[in-house]
Length: 222
Length: 130
Image 1 (cartoon, rainbow over the protein chains, first blue to last red):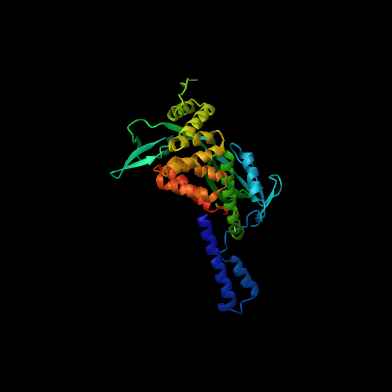
Image 2: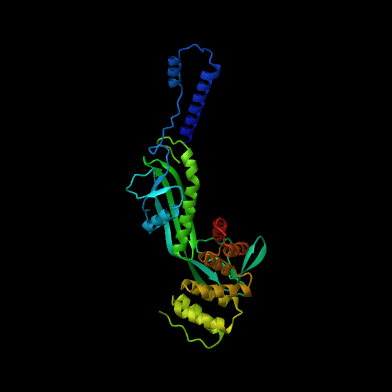
């Protein structure tokens, strides 16, 4: 993509210089106009081609996401994009771009360990006392905990939900335009899903004006 | 399914019986025992936290909120209470209270994974409407 962009920029600059020369500092103003036009036609051109949508981004179709609850989450995306200046259409209708992706995590019983009471940790030669610490079970604690009282601390399991989604926007020719992923934790799956969809939809809406301005090379990566 | 000895009528006895039921996955019985413990010892932060955690797992959100708030009233450094309360406030869309809880949690916790989680939640919530 960088190379394409670079070529495109170079091409545009070349174009502009040629036109500048034609109108203001052309050394041979008496050259026939038809010849000049021919020369301009042969000058370096941007390899930028309009995308299949012609750069227009108004009608967007949200496809069902792969993975657990993919259809439900796609429905939430449709709702979240309503009210924006994008028109959400059915996936089998003509659209300028398609939102697709997958649900990479959809877990209701994420477990965390709660120590009831005080526990001590040693950090930088300091002994710190933590009251009712909670630990992720994925090894996030940098320093082991020991009960402050010398006895085993009672423990209890807390649970929450986590949802992770990755989405991409592709134009009608399949060229990727934008992609993002996000995950969120909440007490319940519905709350986590809502937060993820809201974040990604907002991110896409923010990106739309830039996508509309940007000429897209065929086969370019976002 | 293991047996849990019948507790005598003291707060610690109900508390330990509640934790034993929780380990067995018998959350309704755990909830009852922890409620009895908290009624007999309303100023114990650990008991209130344990009840709050079990109430959340059972979806009894009002009891959970009361218990977790009581837990931090009795121990302002109760790390897990802030974590659970932050998630509960988010569910209630009480964004400001959720951010306060996440910030306090961030000050207290030493778990790197949960620190990152708290930072992400704070960033997410700060973009919410008031």
